[in-house]
Length: 80
Image (cartoon, rainbow, N blue to C red; front, side):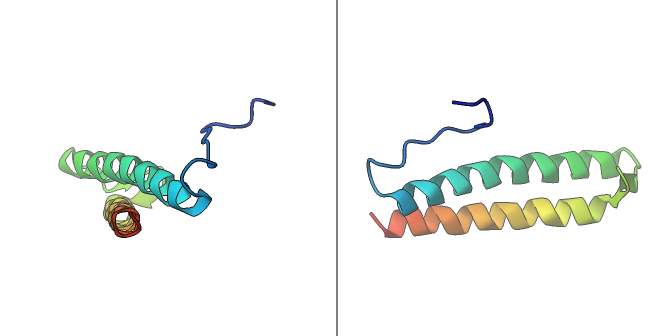
C-alpha cells in the first residue's frame, strides 16, 4: 500500500457492489450524524455561521447524508 488508502475494504467476498453500498451507507451515516449534531450544537450556542457556511445549511447536508445512509441500508437489506 502506498499510504493513500484511508479505508481498506475487501470487495471480493460477497459481491463488489453490495459491499460498496454498505461501506457508503456506514460512512455517510457517521458523517451525517456528526455534521447534523455539530450544526445543531453550534446553532444552540448562538452561531449562525460555521466556517463560512450557515448552520442550517450544514444541518440539512447532515440530514441528507443520513437519508442516503438509510437508502443504502435498505438496498443492502433488499439484496440479501
